[in-house]
Image 1 (tube, rainbow, N blue to C red):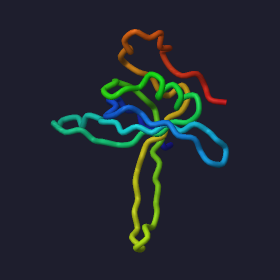
Image 2 (cartoon, one colour):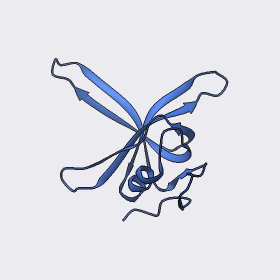
Image 3 (cartoon, rainbow, N blue to C red):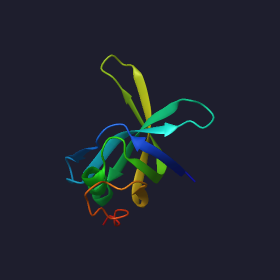
Length: 116
C-alpha cells in the first residue's frame, strides 16, 4: 500500500492551474515536514486535484499547519541535453486533507468535500 500520513506547514501560498485536456483543477504547494529527532525539515511538493485543490487554494496560505494522507508519486523525464531526472512528490485527495489551524476571519469548513 502506498500511503503516508504527514503533518507540516505550507512554505508558500498554493498555486492553482488547470489541465490542458480536461480543464481539471490542480493545486501544488511546497511543504515543510519536521524530521523527527533532528533540527531540520524535509521539503516536498504536495499536489491535489479538483475540489480538494480549490479548498487548498481558497484557504491555504504560507505557514498554514495541515495534516494529510497522501500517496507517494514519481515523475521521471529527460532534459534537452539527454540528462535523466526524477522527482518524488505527494498527492492528496478528498477526505484526506485538513488544516489544523483556523484561518482568521473566515467561515472555513473543516475539510474539503469529495471530488466528483
